Length: 119
Image (tube, rainbow, N blue to C red):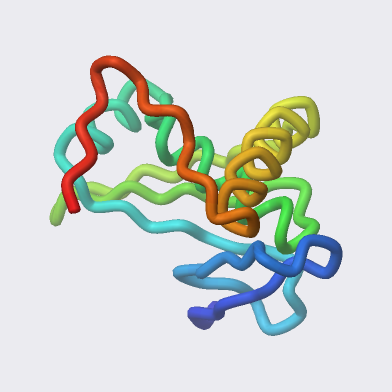
């Protein structure tokens, strides 16, 4: 059985992750999605990029080498096991570092010409 849990990263204090389910011994986790488009992708054996990032974030925080991605459309469930890709995590952490620098220096990121900030 699994329980929902929020964890903080041991090395990077501003990183945390919320798990839909993780085992009591913290050796296996599951992320559950119920979206229509993500379920269509799961039927093809694919995980949408935005969830791929989330899963790797969770693996970084937890130290897991893989995580179960479960897509459910109300009738059918599809399980995909996502293996950890450390090179992707390294790229992700570089982006996080740049963003966090903006937070601690209170410096807004450079506005992209197609981006509109709404306050």
